[in-house]
Image (cartoon, rainbow, N blue to C red):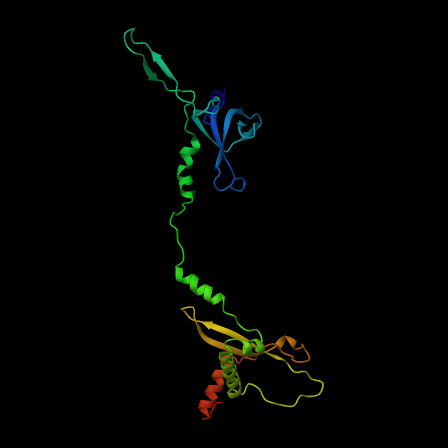
Length: 265
């Protein structure tokens, strides 16, 4: 009646073969990395109150309604029970009474494995997403283990007493003398009398061994550092930043010094 009333032929492109296989996409958050990207359904019919197909979910064993599915009308949605590993039956044919029996292999069409739409549409995607594992075995050179083993057995002293009583006490004493001479030559501190009700910031020696490329000790280093964590804010110090001159100011000072023939210090 519709072509007669409106002059338009009704569309039948949504019609599918009853019982054919359908495949619904599985969301990425609902599957694991190696799981299938779709699961198989069976077409049962069409929804009455909306544009959707009535499908039977083989995994969950329930009827669902969906419009976003792909059909393969050349494959039956239901497959009869049967083991895929069953041997192919043989049929004996008697050619004659005088001839021996001949066995002819007959294919079992009931157990024939059918191709699915998922294999046709997603073969390329599965190949791209397949993780290839290299069979090559890599390992570090043997000499690396020797260097690591040697470095792990180096004992660095934690206190001055440990440094001066160790087997390398002469080398640690030399490193401490070099550090002390460097501090004195650079005028790092100035000796003054301790003001009343003031505290002295204590110091500590740090001992380290500098390891070379061959894993041997190239140098024994000793550093004298102040224990700044013992200072109290607002009592021992006020500001926590270092004043830095702007580059524009430095240029202006250099220009004035050059103009007036002055020396900068």
